[in-house]
Image 1: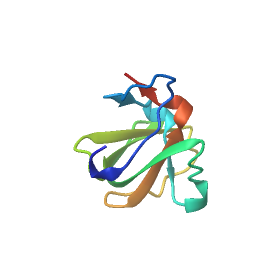
Image 2 (image 1 turned 90 degrees about the horizontal axis):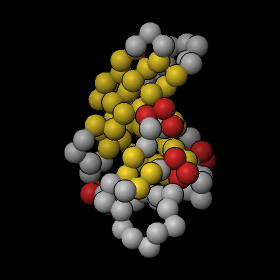
Image 3 (image 1 turned 60 degrees about the vertical axis):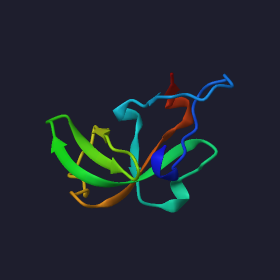
Length: 102
């Protein structure tokens, strides 16, 4: 990725994927560095650009360092208000198994 951040993909091919897809509900927002677990998870640094409550979930837009598109996170089944706000520094994390390359 631009900006020097790297993600691992779930593929046995020896090719360089040009695109990766991660379902928004597969992504977590984390604050504890100990939760990164690089052998099992990808993670990227970003800034919250917006938070929308849809009635059943939160959709959170994240501006990833060095990436010029919005990265979406969907937090479902949240029983209380979340503490993320526009401008917050966050890390997004998801399982390498959930990273689809094509």
